[in-house]
Length: 217
Image (tube, rainbow, N blue to C red; front, side, top):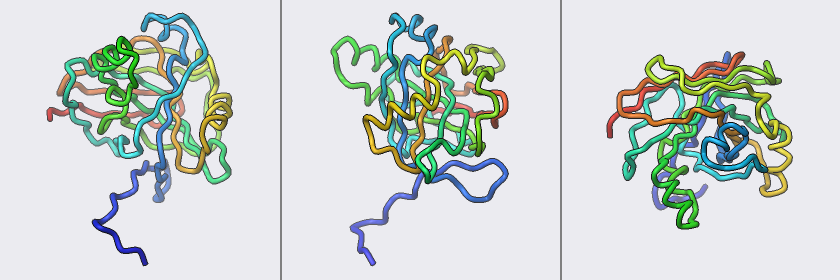
Protein backbone atom coordinates (compact mmCIF):
# COMPACT_ATOMS: atom_id res chain seq x y z
CA UNK A 1 0.00 0.00 0.00
CA UNK A 2 1.34 3.41 -0.98
CA UNK A 3 1.64 6.16 1.60
CA UNK A 4 0.94 9.63 0.19
CA UNK A 5 2.12 12.99 1.46
CA UNK A 6 -1.49 14.09 0.95
CA UNK A 7 -4.57 12.44 -0.55
CA UNK A 8 -4.42 12.20 -4.36
CA UNK A 9 -7.00 14.17 -6.33
CA UNK A 10 -10.07 12.34 -7.57
CA UNK A 11 -9.91 11.08 -11.16
CA UNK A 12 -11.80 13.41 -13.52
CA UNK A 13 -14.58 11.57 -15.36
CA UNK A 14 -17.51 11.87 -17.73
CA UNK A 15 -20.95 10.27 -17.47
CA UNK A 16 -21.92 7.68 -20.08
CA UNK A 17 -25.36 7.88 -21.62
CA UNK A 18 -27.58 5.04 -20.38
CA UNK A 19 -25.01 3.58 -17.97
CA UNK A 20 -24.05 3.95 -14.33
CA UNK A 21 -20.29 3.58 -14.86
CA UNK A 22 -18.18 6.55 -15.91
CA UNK A 23 -15.34 7.27 -18.32
CA UNK A 24 -12.09 8.15 -16.48
CA UNK A 25 -10.28 11.04 -18.16
CA UNK A 26 -6.51 10.63 -18.52
CA UNK A 27 -5.69 13.74 -20.56
CA UNK A 28 -7.18 16.07 -23.16
CA UNK A 29 -5.72 16.68 -26.60
CA UNK A 30 -7.19 19.40 -28.79
CA UNK A 31 -6.96 20.11 -32.52
CA UNK A 32 -6.64 23.69 -33.75
CA UNK A 33 -7.92 25.13 -37.02
CA UNK A 34 -9.67 21.93 -38.14
CA UNK A 35 -12.52 23.83 -39.83
CA UNK A 36 -11.38 25.98 -42.74
CA UNK A 37 -13.93 28.75 -42.04
CA UNK A 38 -12.80 29.08 -38.42
CA UNK A 39 -9.16 29.24 -39.49
CA UNK A 40 -10.14 32.06 -41.85
CA UNK A 41 -12.02 34.02 -39.16
CA UNK A 42 -8.93 33.78 -36.94
CA UNK A 43 -6.81 35.26 -39.72
CA UNK A 44 -5.15 32.08 -40.99
CA UNK A 45 -5.14 30.40 -44.37
CA UNK A 46 -6.40 26.82 -44.51
CA UNK A 47 -3.55 24.66 -43.26
CA UNK A 48 -2.79 21.33 -41.63
CA UNK A 49 -4.37 21.31 -38.16
CA UNK A 50 -2.15 21.17 -35.08
CA UNK A 51 -2.50 20.01 -31.47
CA UNK A 52 -2.50 21.65 -28.07
CA UNK A 53 -3.58 20.21 -24.72
CA UNK A 54 -5.57 20.78 -21.56
CA UNK A 55 -5.12 19.03 -18.20
CA UNK A 56 -7.57 16.25 -17.38
CA UNK A 57 -9.01 18.22 -14.47
CA UNK A 58 -10.08 21.01 -16.85
CA UNK A 59 -13.15 18.84 -17.55
CA UNK A 60 -16.46 20.25 -16.36
CA UNK A 61 -19.12 17.52 -16.41
CA UNK A 62 -22.67 16.75 -15.32
CA UNK A 63 -23.99 20.22 -16.19
CA UNK A 64 -21.79 21.97 -13.63
CA UNK A 65 -21.27 25.70 -14.10
CA UNK A 66 -17.69 26.73 -14.93
CA UNK A 67 -16.57 29.97 -13.36
CA UNK A 68 -15.41 32.94 -15.41
CA UNK A 69 -11.61 32.64 -15.27
CA UNK A 70 -9.18 35.14 -13.84
CA UNK A 71 -6.73 37.20 -15.90
CA UNK A 72 -9.04 37.70 -18.90
CA UNK A 73 -11.70 40.07 -20.16
CA UNK A 74 -12.33 38.10 -23.36
CA UNK A 75 -13.43 34.52 -22.66
CA UNK A 76 -14.55 32.73 -25.86
CA UNK A 77 -16.67 29.65 -26.58
CA UNK A 78 -15.66 26.97 -29.13
CA UNK A 79 -18.09 24.07 -29.63
CA UNK A 80 -16.42 20.78 -30.58
CA UNK A 81 -16.99 17.09 -31.24
CA UNK A 82 -15.09 15.11 -28.57
CA UNK A 83 -13.67 11.62 -29.18
CA UNK A 84 -13.06 9.26 -26.24
CA UNK A 85 -10.31 6.62 -26.51
CA UNK A 86 -11.11 3.16 -25.14
CA UNK A 87 -9.20 0.08 -24.01
CA UNK A 88 -8.43 -1.07 -27.55
CA UNK A 89 -6.86 2.28 -28.43
CA UNK A 90 -9.69 3.21 -30.77
CA UNK A 91 -12.51 5.71 -30.41
CA UNK A 92 -15.04 4.19 -28.03
CA UNK A 93 -17.44 7.11 -27.69
CA UNK A 94 -18.41 10.65 -28.55
CA UNK A 95 -19.58 13.80 -26.79
CA UNK A 96 -20.27 17.48 -27.27
CA UNK A 97 -17.57 19.67 -25.75
CA UNK A 98 -16.73 23.34 -25.44
CA UNK A 99 -13.14 24.58 -25.59
CA UNK A 100 -13.15 27.73 -23.44
CA UNK A 101 -10.39 30.14 -24.42
CA UNK A 102 -8.88 33.27 -22.88
CA UNK A 103 -8.72 34.95 -26.28
CA UNK A 104 -6.82 38.00 -25.10
CA UNK A 105 -4.09 35.86 -23.54
CA UNK A 106 -3.96 33.74 -26.68
CA UNK A 107 -3.46 36.82 -28.84
CA UNK A 108 -0.66 38.02 -26.57
CA UNK A 109 1.02 34.60 -26.71
CA UNK A 110 0.78 34.46 -30.51
CA UNK A 111 2.30 37.92 -30.86
CA UNK A 112 5.18 37.02 -28.56
CA UNK A 113 5.67 33.54 -30.04
CA UNK A 114 4.93 31.92 -26.69
CA UNK A 115 2.95 28.79 -25.72
CA UNK A 116 -0.84 28.89 -25.34
CA UNK A 117 -1.05 27.07 -22.00
CA UNK A 118 -2.53 29.96 -20.02
CA UNK A 119 -4.99 30.72 -22.83
CA UNK A 120 -6.25 27.17 -23.31
CA UNK A 121 -5.32 24.93 -20.38
CA UNK A 122 -6.78 26.81 -17.43
CA UNK A 123 -9.10 25.48 -14.71
CA UNK A 124 -12.61 24.46 -15.87
CA UNK A 125 -11.77 25.18 -19.51
CA UNK A 126 -13.28 21.97 -20.95
CA UNK A 127 -17.03 21.58 -20.33
CA UNK A 128 -18.16 18.26 -21.81
CA UNK A 129 -21.44 16.42 -22.11
CA UNK A 130 -22.24 12.76 -21.54
CA UNK A 131 -20.53 10.19 -23.76
CA UNK A 132 -22.45 8.17 -26.31
CA UNK A 133 -20.69 4.83 -26.84
CA UNK A 134 -20.33 3.10 -30.20
CA UNK A 135 -20.11 4.51 -33.70
CA UNK A 136 -20.63 8.20 -34.35
CA UNK A 137 -24.38 8.46 -35.07
CA UNK A 138 -23.95 10.82 -38.05
CA UNK A 139 -20.56 11.75 -39.55
CA UNK A 140 -22.17 14.71 -41.33
CA UNK A 141 -24.25 15.90 -38.36
CA UNK A 142 -24.87 19.60 -37.77
CA UNK A 143 -22.95 21.15 -34.88
CA UNK A 144 -24.05 24.37 -33.21
CA UNK A 145 -23.74 26.56 -30.14
CA UNK A 146 -26.17 29.14 -28.76
CA UNK A 147 -25.68 31.70 -26.00
CA UNK A 148 -28.84 32.78 -24.18
CA UNK A 149 -30.85 31.36 -27.09
CA UNK A 150 -28.88 33.26 -29.75
CA UNK A 151 -27.23 30.85 -32.21
CA UNK A 152 -23.59 31.84 -32.72
CA UNK A 153 -21.82 28.82 -34.17
CA UNK A 154 -23.11 26.47 -36.85
CA UNK A 155 -21.44 23.93 -39.10
CA UNK A 156 -21.32 20.26 -40.04
CA UNK A 157 -18.96 17.57 -38.85
CA UNK A 158 -17.98 16.79 -42.43
CA UNK A 159 -16.65 20.36 -42.71
CA UNK A 160 -13.63 19.19 -40.71
CA UNK A 161 -10.28 19.22 -42.51
CA UNK A 162 -9.28 16.01 -40.72
CA UNK A 163 -11.93 13.48 -39.72
CA UNK A 164 -11.77 11.83 -36.26
CA UNK A 165 -9.94 8.69 -37.39
CA UNK A 166 -7.31 10.78 -39.19
CA UNK A 167 -6.90 12.92 -36.07
CA UNK A 168 -6.38 9.80 -33.95
CA UNK A 169 -3.76 8.44 -36.34
CA UNK A 170 -1.88 11.75 -36.28
CA UNK A 171 -2.08 11.92 -32.49
CA UNK A 172 -0.48 8.48 -32.26
CA UNK A 173 2.58 9.80 -34.11
CA UNK A 174 3.07 12.39 -31.37
CA UNK A 175 1.89 10.65 -28.18
CA UNK A 176 1.30 7.22 -26.69
CA UNK A 177 -2.48 7.51 -26.95
CA UNK A 178 -4.12 5.46 -24.19
CA UNK A 179 -7.53 4.65 -22.73
CA UNK A 180 -9.02 7.67 -21.03
CA UNK A 181 -7.68 10.21 -23.51
CA UNK A 182 -10.16 12.74 -24.89
CA UNK A 183 -9.62 14.49 -28.22
CA UNK A 184 -11.41 17.78 -28.96
CA UNK A 185 -11.58 17.85 -32.76
CA UNK A 186 -11.82 21.57 -33.56
CA UNK A 187 -14.52 24.21 -33.84
CA UNK A 188 -16.54 25.76 -36.68
CA UNK A 189 -16.68 29.49 -37.31
CA UNK A 190 -18.61 31.90 -35.08
CA UNK A 191 -16.53 31.83 -31.89
CA UNK A 192 -17.27 34.72 -29.59
CA UNK A 193 -17.28 36.13 -26.06
CA UNK A 194 -18.99 34.84 -22.93
CA UNK A 195 -19.88 36.76 -19.79
CA UNK A 196 -20.90 35.67 -16.29
CA UNK A 197 -24.53 34.55 -16.32
CA UNK A 198 -24.52 33.45 -19.97
CA UNK A 199 -26.34 30.20 -20.69
CA UNK A 200 -24.59 28.01 -23.28
CA UNK A 201 -26.33 25.26 -25.25
CA UNK A 202 -24.10 23.18 -27.54
CA UNK A 203 -25.48 20.44 -29.77
CA UNK A 204 -24.44 17.79 -32.30
CA UNK A 205 -27.25 15.75 -33.81
CA UNK A 206 -27.35 12.25 -32.34
CA UNK A 207 -25.38 13.12 -29.19
CA UNK A 208 -26.43 14.32 -25.77
CA UNK A 209 -26.47 18.15 -25.72
CA UNK A 210 -24.14 20.13 -23.48
CA UNK A 211 -25.63 22.95 -21.43
CA UNK A 212 -23.99 25.10 -18.80
CA UNK A 213 -24.09 28.58 -17.28
CA UNK A 214 -20.98 30.67 -16.78
CA UNK A 215 -20.85 31.76 -13.16
CA UNK A 216 -19.02 34.67 -11.59
CA UNK A 217 -15.84 33.92 -9.68
